[in-house]
Image (cartoon, rainbow, N blue to C red):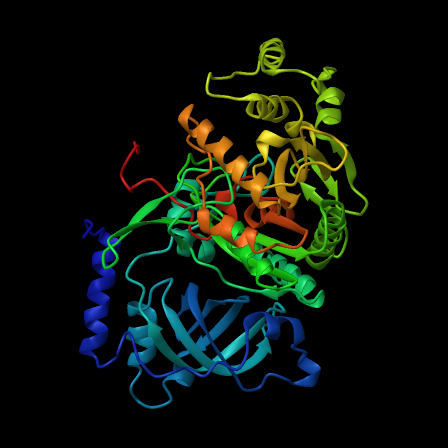
Length: 511
């Protein structure tokens, strides 16, 4: 246990004192809440004399004792409201302990209390609850960080200092962050609304939400390093999924026309403002469709999300206003590279590509094949410049082991990514459903693995067997929920849209 501060010791003493006078600091029975603070502030009208019997619960956030009466502030999940507490009203009999001892001396800021009373307006016009009953619901043993404000002498403005703003602490102790930085809650409410808007859209289309395994005997469906674990009874290795693509395609083989899953995926890789070891993707597969059809679906769905969250298609992200109104800009990968670098790379072999990359100051390593080099050039010179939502289509075949060969352009596949605010937000294909071609692509990946590519795919015999039973032409999509949430909530890092992002062990690398 950590070393207790003076404040914490004091709170523990108060806990003991409460128990000694017969007050349970953690009562078990329910407290019946009838209204939220915000509801009262929005709807109380003195002339209507409404809210004359209310019951609220929340944290005590401030108190101002003035002899026999006090003002305090209660914060619940909706906001804050002022309380007026009068000694003789909460202690109608001879015994004034509840006011004199409990309220004045043994309650602390952050404690959960329940109050009953009626609403009125103070002389200065502040809507308040006139408390007739007060009950301790849970004692807080650690003080919340106090956000202090003071007047700036020069400007006369209130300046906040000592705020709980250190990202390290905010992400590690999100529970404190949510209490003292109420705007943080809005981000997460929006994230949930985003997922609901997508769900509603897909359900309206008649697609089926499904669940597939997170623990997989083989990892597949993407290029990434997996987390490995062990099952004792079966004495076998299992992997946390890096994607669910290969399972959803098996369901298309099985005769479903449209399936989707909001999947937690895991990649054993570096962390950054855009990468957490676990993240959420929505993957969707629809039979008898192709990637051009899927592009229209993505535009429509994301436009709908923007409208659901913001009531308009424009979203402020950093210094940019991003407009999700359809239709979005479209370039092929080669067109985009030529537009932003002036170099046409469509016909180049590996040697020429290496030379081009060098001229463009793009760092390479020897294990990179053609497609990886093209990917690096794109990532360095094109992607960061695509701020408005843009579709990039028609990727080199080596980059996309699970996508269908292009109907018109040899060496390319029918694939698109949507790029927005300089980052990929989705990836989609006309899915490869030719089992012979698919086996060859897996084998090419094994070769890349031998060259030292740690992200190369593994060969999945059962998936090939499924394809051999016949998979209809299918369009597939993976859309990154965390990245889309960052854009839709104007959050500059993925850690801002994950309640509990992965952190290094506490105490490491700290001054």
